[in-house]
Picture (cartoon, rainbow, N blue to C red):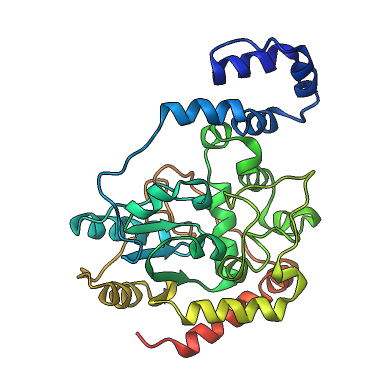
Length: 329
């Protein structure tokens, strides 16, 4: 339960006044936590009414719904941050407005914003991309599935304490766990067995909707809903392979320069030929190269951990191998 003082403070921040309705106050005291209180208040008719008066938005021009847009489906720990920076600069030179959403929250944005943007780059799932209006040129980067998971752990473990504290705890709980646990203990946690970022994360992102906005999120008391990967793995793999095959272009972290040359050529951009990894989490990383991430000492992959990584990447490995076999840069 929440304290009445907490509710009144939140209500005052939202509406600029105290909550006088005792019945509503009693009802809100039963809300689980502050995050759920925020959701209740922000979805209330009173708040929607108020915001509607404040932010009536009129775009500068009526965008064409059939315009061509670039969509970079950024799969976590697949070299996407470095790629994004170059793509952003090139798109800016072409005068393309980039969508503000970098996490998996596209469906929270109004249609007017989506129609104005010519570049979308973020951790979007397949379902979100379907709602982007226009003729889409979709691109992505893949990585060896097991190497991706090892890199993901090192990235999470490298988060400074300040970064972990300033973000809502549940939205970055994987980083907190990685900072507390060895790599083997982290991946062997039973609670993380079906985490959508760890269990065949590439196939999940390419085939269906993901259950949360941030891939680092983890809600121990709230099980993730089942998706097509859990219900029909073969169908999920087929869907992911079909989407990948229908993309304008894709590439691989292991062949980053060649991949970037290929992708940018398809998009009509000139590429300089070299790309530096902005958020590399490899064993040779330094704090400077990590741009704010702490240095992480590499851990050996034990037989037990190797077996676990194998189990977590069965579908992803099939997707990766098939993509490799059909890649024609």
